[in-house]
Amino acid sequence: MHQRVAAINDLSGLGRCSLTVDIAVLAAMGIEACPLPTAVLTSQTGYPGYHCVPFTKQMCNYTEHWQELQVSFQGILSGYLATPDAATQVQDFLEKFHKPGVLYLCDPVLGDNGKAYRGFTDASIQAVRHLAFQADLLTPNLTEFCILTDTEMDSLKKLGQENPEELYRLLQYRSYLFKDQALVITGIPIKERDQQLLVNLIIDHAKTPVAIPSPHLGGSYSGTGDLFAAVLMGSQLQKRNLEQGVRLAGELIVRGIADAQKEHTPCNDGINYEPYLNLLSLSSLQTMGQRGTCQAQK
Ligand code: PXL
Image (tube, rainbow, N blue to C red; front, side, top):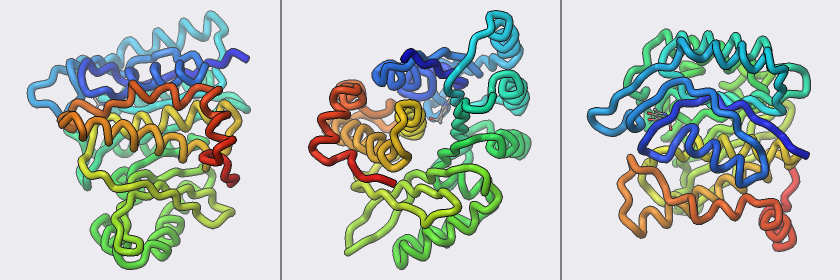
């Protein structure tokens, strides 16, 4: 069945992030992505000298026109918002389109590596937090989780090196603010049996958190959070459980990073995920199911 996702994100010319990856990933998963740009940039904001044109004033035209056309969506995905006003526009969009049965995935794009991205203020954080409360599913990285929940990050990182299980319990406890949402906290660095790993942690409040590790290949590449959110949205619409979605996103990202590292791609340019989009097609998912890669049930 044809499915549609409203992809509310920026269009960055360089950096393989945001709408560029939303459209590519969802198309590879057999889903139509309808772009609602929040801003148009020459590149993502990690490059020196980027130009950004906020699209805030135009966003309401999309909401109004799509409503006039009586379009409906199976999913709504929101990501980078250049201004707090853009969050108000998303709020308005949600009032019209986030109906029962429609999945709203909020990727609270705010920062990485312990720091907020350039241009983000307290007002932006409040605005994104407000959206996060309305989401069905949230995909913060560890930095974003700490910003949203006012948690100090260094002690969490230390705990990840000493006692990861205790860290997972603490993260579940700190996420009580979002008790009506399912969360996947991405990119949590931990040490297990003397190995450095990155964990994606599924928190669904009634249950014990599920930690899904992947190798820590190093580097902090543009767009990996956007890839993660888009794959998770696609896999949810394909009625796969969260654990399957998280494993699939992890597999795509690990392969893309390994390829980027082989070619010495600068982190700002994002990862070489394009050759691996075929991993996301339904036929290769079925093959993986037979191999057992994606079989784990939540
Ligand atoms: O991938 C997150 C992201 C999205 N969009 C823009 C960004 C960033 C991260 O830096 O700058 C414009």
